[in-house]
Amino acid sequence: MYYLAGMTQDQIARELGVSRQRAQRLVARAMADGLIRVRLEHPIASCLALERELKQKFGLQMARVAPSLPEGVDPLTSVAPVAAKEVERYLSSDTPLVISLGTGRTLRAVVADMADMNCPEHKLVSLIGNAAPDGSASVYEVILRLADRVKAKHFPMGLPVFSKNAEEREFYRGLAHMQTPFELARNSDVTFVGIGQIGEDAPLFVDGFVDRAALDDLLAQDAVGEIVGWVFDSNGHYLEGGTNARTNGVQVNPDRNPVICIAAGKSKYMALKAALKGKLVNGLVTDEACAQYLLG
Image (tube, rainbow, N blue to C red):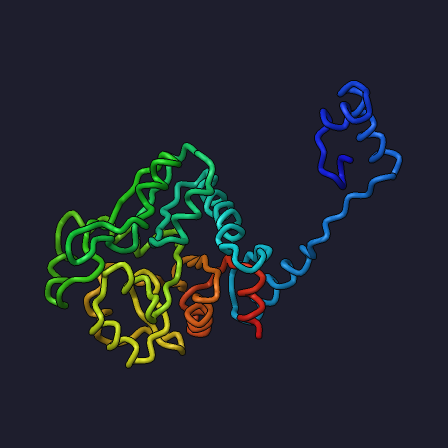
């Protein structure tokens, strides 16, 4: 009744005509006497094996693989809690850290899954602006949400995602109040980012940060993905010119610190494969399906 039918102990007590305490003891005795054997049917060991293979194949410093969910279920439901634990692990450090973050739906889901913490010793800094050309802010901006949850000092990037041209970008970068966020972002102790695909469903296009002409130009240059607004091709090489000449943000550098990418879902596969090929990130949190794709 308890292990197969999923009945509560109260329901079992009523069914058998005994007290709840008696039903509780019967359930416990079934386990103690070996009548019930609990076994985790999901081959969790396969997730650990995939982590090892990902680290070996792509030279990653860390990899976490969450169990895949049934078709039609948002993979972030599985990946976000695993990624949240990684962020919490860094925030639990006694050593003051600078943690830089991208933005987007994935990271917002990660923050939503995090526990409340009190981390005034750490600093959070955004890697990119979050304003669209019309001045509206992205609903997927995360640094304010995270700072509120963990009580850490934060440094948002108060800029549009893209400048109108390279000259305007240099003007923004020269503003006095932007020097601290840029410096912190460049020299952070750890970086957490999502990844965006380039296509008709590109977040940059759907959310209005680039127009049709800019998207077509990116596609013509073999663009497949972007990390905090910096667009790269299928070989994992950042494009020259185009929107990259106007991006108001800091390009991640895995040679300086851990750059952990959190991604899952078929729409991310090509972009993630290219990013790993080009060694644009050196840490990964994903699910089984994505890991199996990346490993071929």
